[in-house]
Length: 346
Image 1: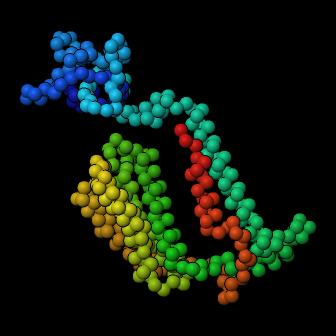
Image 2: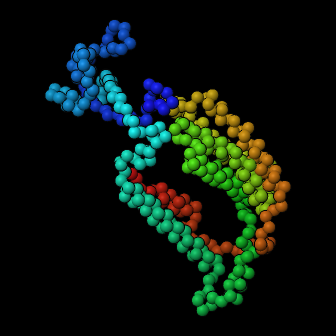
Image 3: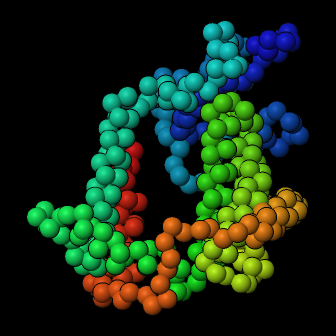
């Protein structure tokens, strides 16, 4: 019941129990808003001649002479509702059943799935560490225990320190844009999780989490612009206008274009999940929030001095040994897909 009003109730839970019943019926030719068909062989819950109504149960469906409806022909859909008042369930605790799954998933199964993920994460981390150590050994030979002296460690660092903070030769701008976008998504995710954990964003309001996450992501545009500008200026970049444009429209543009394509496909297939054009146009509000913040953050970042690295980078890069064939892009992509293939399915 509604605490502040009388004779009003809130629906906090419902259970659907489907039955397959083959009805022998004919459409009602008379104009009526309540009777759409006349059933020749109604079950007790659908018999309009009975004064005392009954609810559908398993005995009615499995009674002698009853058959299940085949997946063809005309189907008559009927329903009845049983309203049950639960005075022990309060409005504020209505989501507890979804958090506990009402015992549908045992606690030991949850822990088993969690342990599977942890083992998979540790295994993949071990593989990455092994690859890094192997490459490091080939790049600069590690000393043995007898040779592991402070002088040897100092000499090895002297041979590597001039290449540690070397800017990428391919595209420093791309690295800076990725760093800015990554920081933006990370901050927006943390803020959304914090709002949900503290109860500030209630899941009772449909779409509230999504809207809150989008606004957080748009608001973190200033962080993305600042991070990109500091990184790009430190790496010696000069085309800051183009870098700022890519941060403001790169990732949001790809997401928006993908959403438009999926929405068009859904429209041609006649899906009910098609988003109206008016709602899509309201998404352009992003341009009025995120873009100015990205430009502001980039302006502040470009005004700052570049990041001062603890060591200087040499002009002549040290040659990198040839990598084995299994470290190229196809093998790397295949290895990255392993967690998604091996993740447990429930």
